[in-house]
Amino acid sequence: MDCRKDIEFRKPNFNDIEEIESFKQEFIDNNSGMDGTGKLSDLSAKEWLRLNQKMEHESTPELVKYLQYGLFRGKRLLGLIDIKLELRGYLVEFGGHIGYCVRPQERRKGYGKLMLQKALEVCKEINLNKVLITCLEDNIASSKIIEACGGVYEKTVFDDKNYQESLKRYWIDLDKKI
Image (cartoon, rainbow, N blue to C red; front, side, top):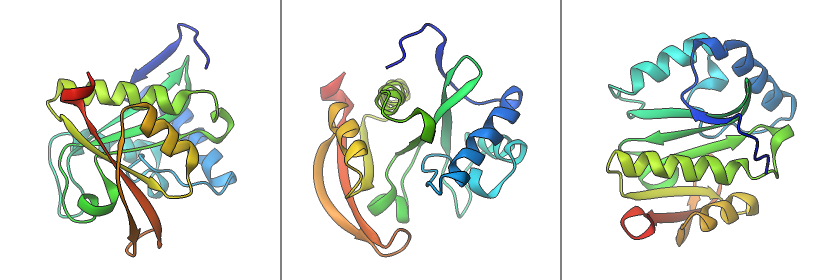
């Protein structure tokens, strides 16, 4: 884990546009999924930031309200994590409240766990005290992160709508954890 003081957990903003585009390109170059980034894979950084601002305050038929955060070391974007403020449809069974990803070059350094810990603090602040998090059944790193942050395994479900793979469901009860 990089413990320097320049690690910051915050909402991405328009000053981060170039870094967001670089982050996105690294995922494309590595053919890696970008969970926890909302629609970043489909939008420019500027459009994505505008959508994030809108979705903090209103939901649409396709999207629920959410908060988007990033973990930064200086100006470098290390990872993104979103907190859905409500669950409906796909999210109830498969998606959960929180999704996240760590930049491919920055994996295995503790940033995923740090982001999830910080996101759970936000959840507690906004009175979202029981949090559902899912991960692909074969994503051992994510399972370990979720469990280290208090995740209690509920069950494995087959996602026949998006991934066409099995997902592990975990609950974190923040009334008991923090």
